[in-house]
Length: 232
Ligand code: 9D3
Image 1: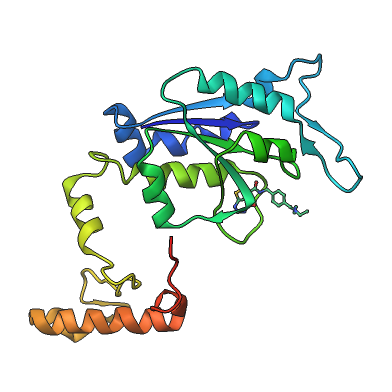
Image 2 (image 1 turned 90 degrees about the vertical axis):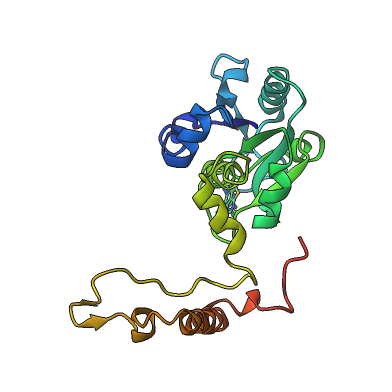
């Protein structure tokens, strides 16, 4: 799968995309990620990418011309045309189900905003999708784009090892939080591992884990328990 990222801060992407699973996936050719600076498509002497909002108000808005030019130029770099995803606080809340939907695309173009956001003509006429990663305030779309690249890449065939892939399939069967996990030593600073885990009684271990997962989910994420599941 090909990702193109459009941003005013390409340097932010050096690092996170070059480590671990993503590094292996890129080296193996399962994913390619090209990062582009929107400012390269600003044509005036000062390479201006923002301007004052019509009607007044605080902050600046990203001008449409460089953004349209950047997206059109990057679309032309490869085939087929990419689905254009705008990262914005107004977008639909990112979920694993959305990652699965995006992972079925051959190509994604992730458009990151700065300032107060984009001129609405960008939103209406240049993008196919708007995504937010949650109800908190980021400085721009860059970290959100990285979250999406990592989440989607992990779903692509061959990206995870067979071990990790298997866990993916068989765990969290009912959308519950994970049960608590322990490793050696059996006692650390006076804190003991629950006896049942040392008992070797597989059925009892399974029962304990199910109970723990359910209890945790009830306490921390009641929204995950049926009734208010995201329809996708
Ligand atoms: C504090 C400024 N805001 C109120 C006037 C609006 C605002 C504009 C731009 C808030 C955040 C941003 C920058 N954020 C993103 O571009 C963004 C984002 C986010 O902030 N939270 C969760 N997901 C995303 S995706 C893109």
